[in-house]
Structures are given as C-alpha cells and as structure tokens.
Length: 422
Image (cartoon, rainbow, N blue to C red):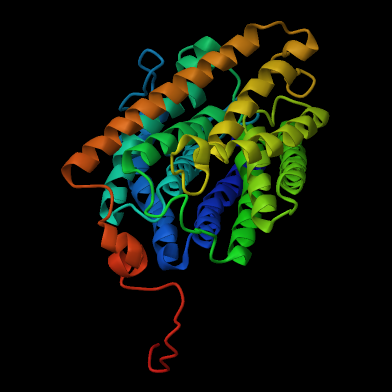
C-alpha cells in the first residue's frame, strides 16, 4: 500500500491553487498598468497562457520536463498524456505526495512564466500570434529549462540541479531569469510602441495595479514555500523569508524614488514588492531571515534603477519584465552564492559569507549565464520566425485605436451610458 503523507499533500495542493491564482493576479496587475484601450487584451494574454499551457502540460509538457532524463537536457516520453502518474508517488520516504499533486504544482509555474512575457510586448502584439507563441515557447524554451533546474533525480536528472549543483529553490532560473531574458528578446523583435519616449503611457488604473500586486504577493507564499513540497520547517523558512524580502523591497523602491524624483508612488511600491518577491524566489529556502532582509533591501533599489535602463538603451520593455524579473532573478541567484547557509536548509550549501568558498558562487554564475543565453537566443528565433511568417506585431492603426476593440470587440469600461446594453 502506498504511504502518502496527507499533510504534505494538502500543502502542495493548496500551494498549487495559490500559484494558479497568481496568473489572474498578474492579469489584473498588467491590465491596470496599460492604457485603457488595451486593458482587456493585456488580461486576455494571461488567460491564454493558462489555457494553452495546461493543454500542452497534459499532452507532453510534464513528461518532457520531469520524465526520465536524457543527458540532463530533456525528459523522456514516459508520461505522455500524464500516463504512469495515477496512483504514483514522489518525494522522500515519510514525505511522499501523489505525482499528480506535484504535476499540478509545476503546471502553475509554467503558466505564470509564459504569462509574464506578455508584459514586455503590451499594446502591440497580435493576439492569435501570441497564442501560437505561447505554445511554441513553452515547448522549446520552458520545458528544457525546467528539466535542467527542477528535475532532481539523484544524479540522473537535469544538468543544473544534479550535475552543476547550482541552488534554485523556487525558480530563479526557470521562472525569473528565463522570463527576463525572453522578454528582452521579444521587446527587441517587436520593436517599440508608437510614441515610446514621446507620449505619456501611464497606467490607466492604479487601484487595479495595487490589487494585482496584492494577489501576486499572496500567491507567492504558495510559489516559494510550496516548493518545499512538505509542510514543515523548510516551508516555514521559505514563507517568512518571502514576506521579509517582499516588504523590504517595496520600501527601498519608494525610498529610491523619493530620493530620485521627490515622490514615492503607488506604482513604485507595487513594483518594489514584486521585485523583492522575485529576488527571494531562488534563495528563500537557502538563506536565513537576516539574509532575506538584506536581499530585499538590495532588490528594491537594484530593480528600481534597472527599469530606467530601457530609456537609456532604447528597448521598449513595456511593463518592466526585464528590470524586475530578469534583474531580480539574477540578484537572487547570485546572493545564494554569498549568503546561503546550511542552518537554513541542511540539504543546501554554505555560501562565501559562511566559509563555503567560491564553488557555489561559480555554479550560480554558470546557471545564470546558461539559462539567460539559451532563453534569449531561442526566444529571439521563435519571435522572429513568427514575425516573418504570420506576423507578430499589429498594424499601426490597430495599435493607435487599441487592441481591445480590434481583437475582442469589447472595451474595459462602458462609457457610452447605453442602458439597453446588458
């Protein structure tokens, strides 16, 4: 008889629900950040990510990400259609959970990662082309990277986790650096929005932005502490570290804004919270609470500075995916090399500040470079092929009129006052 730990299973299932909740939260967050004429389109891009990714995950996604490893590069075809998962368990003895609980949890990671990319190309992407891009990108980019960093199989799994030995508790490489590098490639291929650096492109609804940020903050507890895959002390460590870093980064972002511009903005506090959550994601299960505080303080300033670089270098990352997720994920992965401690996680390693030497830091750097390079190059190629064939960017008139009416025949707000419309 299979011995399932019901407490751990309940926690992983609850965490999966929390992480799935993050994607509607992202839709609200992004929807409030764009101009009103494309708010629904922005939100629909996130919901497309949910639908397309789920279908792929069932058919072959889970199998390629977590099936039997082939050289540490990709999983096998042993779980097509989620076959050989029913009544199967995973995890160490005493903490075993159903494979389907793990599969559901990991599905939500795939969904939120590709949904993040939509923020880089807000206001100018064809909806049908985006749907196709989601399917191709999940297949060719996300699944290999997930296998590299998440498929721990006792030395026979992904090359980053089992051979390189880099530490990534909840997705600094798979989710954050991957999405940041891919977002930069997308922004470059699709080009700048009409009026970039000339016209004001302010968020149309800041209460929505704050609500979305709050939903993401809430869901991030499942994202990070759920990655412990058990309801124990490690999950508690990851949860408190997530809260500490997220709150600290929110404060340092607006402190940086205040010094730079003389005002602390609501967009700043929301963005700072996300930056802190991003940075602590890979480190939450490997650093102590003081380490989480230091990382959060650094992340707020670093990301606040990074988002301004798009104006200097001329790339239009519409909603700052590169500056927040790319830079925050990079910072978190590097911080592990310095501040990881086995007192936080006995199965981890000591970083440079805890007399662990430079080996861990070197592994972290290699993982960062490998994932960023692969993601950028593969995404650039995918987006370029779509652009040259069916087209990825909308026509200028459609961009100026707004994508809500162009693609969805709807508008976010009924401003006509037509009482006959139900």
